[in-house]
Amino acid sequence: MVRKAIALFVLLGLVLSVGAVSAKSASDCTEVKRSEFLDSRHAFDISAAMVKNAQMDAVIEAAQENGADASGLESIKDEVNEKFGGIGTETRAMYSATMGEIKGLLQQFRETARAMGELDGKASEVQAKIQEKVEGIQAEADSLKEDAKGNARSIALGIFDFHICIAEARIETISNRGLETAESTAALDAVTAKRAGLEAALDTEDRAEIKAANEEIKDLWKGLRSAFSGAVKKKADEYQEKVMGRTQEAIDKLKGAGVDTSALEGSYAKIGEKFSEINELADAGNRAGAITARQELRTMLQEAAQEIRGMFQSYRESKAAGSATSAGASDDTSGEDETPDGGSSGDSGDSGSGSEGSGNGSEDSGQGGAQE
Image (cartoon, rainbow, N blue to C red; front, side, top):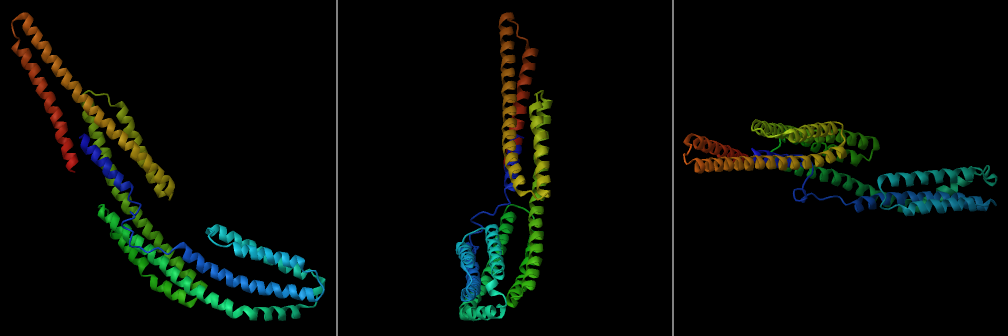
């Protein structure tokens, strides 16, 4: 009985940890390095910076030719270039914030230029100068942009393939742990089938098509994650039922033997509550909370296993001590009276045998659990 409960606690621990793919099972997946993505993104930024600099240089030059003080424009331009130059390994949020600041500075530059009286009525002159400056760097900027587009296409497909590979490794992992994979495999096949559509959308360079393809794939990924969660939850529910059932059996057996099980029953109730908490957190999509709750459950299961083991051990020792005391008392009485009470001795012997039988029964049951 004890070993059965302990074995089930260990197995449940495996189920609870199945969410992570082991490094070994995912080792064949080639990850698109963050540096490659950043290099491609940076190339786009450099191309944009080249064009913006040419435009600002044209406006500053026009302002100076018309006798305006362009120091304010030059200061804004320097700040814009400083922001562009600082773009590197930022997180997505930091990058978006930086690009937002650049956009604000460019707007400030335009407003400052428009406020210059020296440039009133000079719009066509300024526009011609902007066109001239941009044409001077356009070929280089376009070449850089085309290279970045090609890299971005390869990176997008590489990221897609990497996640497909990780999903395949995860399916293999949960399959090796005895979990159902039919639904997960079907969901992954649906995602994989969308690669051609993503590739075609990237080839068009049409933002609307690329966005539509990505949204479709995103929805399918959600379905795959749901399939993974369903497989894990199903297996966890099965083990939960076994763990709770075996623990209740242990409580009933100990209680039937006259052992105080109030503390164990309290642990049993708390384990049931923790199972419910994990399910609620998982259903709510609170991944971090569910992970923390699983860790707490593992500790509770370990403590409960030790508690059960200790109670059975104490019970066996108590019975063995009781049998020895009973046998000793019978011998002393026989010595004093010099008239052995065969009936009394026989009763004690039967009681002792019963205790040993009960103990062996527990051990046999435990071996069955270990074999499971």
